[in-house]
Length: 409
Image (tube, rainbow, N blue to C red; front, side, top):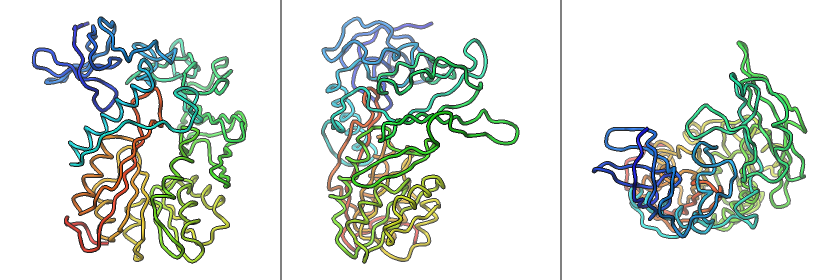
């Protein structure tokens, strides 16, 4: 085992901080800027190494006792900022996003991540997935993964989840190799759905507690969403983002809006309210389960079209220019093909949501290459105790200002 004594520099994207040793960059987890630490090298990759702080020699004023009892070195890999004050964590996250935006998106921004709702740094999560150990002494036990490891931590006392959400799940043995999807819905009911283990023919999915679908509410509308499907993990995120979309979309009756990577159609609902029955809203997602939830929840909004398809294919078939497009792509971002299609469709206003700082910044750069102006950037601390953030960019483009060479719709 190689150990190094390092003086830690600024935060990097991905949950580490940057240090240097003999001209080599070392990415150090579980450390804060300005600290002196003893770090254990975990991976050597030529010009840069990865390490984890196993001893804090000189601590930052921002360091606290871990807010998550199972996180840290040799613990669960999820709560990788549980040892920083929540305010310091938000400041660090803002700095990381600012760095990525400038380097990858060519856009200067500064600010801190914003709190989401009033729940605080702990007990905010309403959905979680547990893996079940397939073999060894832990076979049949549910748990969280250690960082970049197949090993599980079977103590389920994670600080992200509310008290009682995982109660009793560590008292029984589950089918080895299965997954448990747990949701605490807006009716206060816990749902536990087991998927797998995968047999030679197919993986089975069944509710072992509660129902297969969970009740979720945003505004005055109710969704029934499969526990295995996507829903915002933070209890207040869907409401906060919906209100932001409603305000920044600047829609009026009769207009057209696209809700891309729309999931269960939460954004489609507020867009539909703005454009009214004389308008049109298209919501697109690849998930059949999410589409079913959207169709059921939005059944009274006849001017909403729910399409189950990839966003790229869906855009290729559209002939009606929207007044606004809202995108909430996966961690990999929307990418060049989708941004090119939006620019080719001459969408004048875009609200782009991203849950990974680097891919979000790259997408912003792609928009800017097509002549879009960044009106606003917001960064939300939607995943407290972790390095993850949710970013929102509001972009606009005047007619005829296409700078790049996009594919044609």
